[in-house]
Image 1 (cartoon, rainbow, N blue to C red):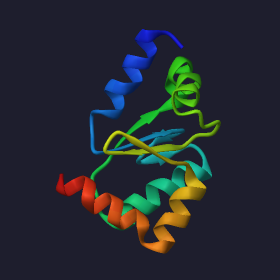
Image 2 (image 1 turned 180 degrees about the vertical axis):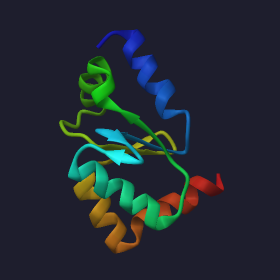
Image 3 (image 1 turned 60 degrees about the vertical axis):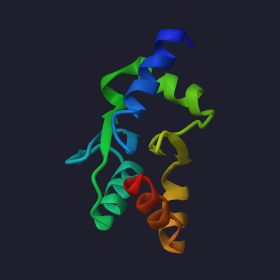
Length: 107
């Protein structure tokens, strides 16, 4: 990964306390896993930003290298990689995600 791409990804993540790399957009997710993550954050009623990896092949591949995580969506809270859809579901069901979101939004 080039230093420029790494910086570009870091700049995207820094745009919001909750940032999701996904297929599609918040209002029109393009895969079921991305839709699930959107629904979780919408249920929590929190503000978050997204990036459509389908619009940029360089970011689509680069984010996988950046996080060492092979799949999309990818969720970052306060700049820290949290995981993908399965992790979001598990943390939402356990209440852990709500705690992470509250801490992030309070900071």
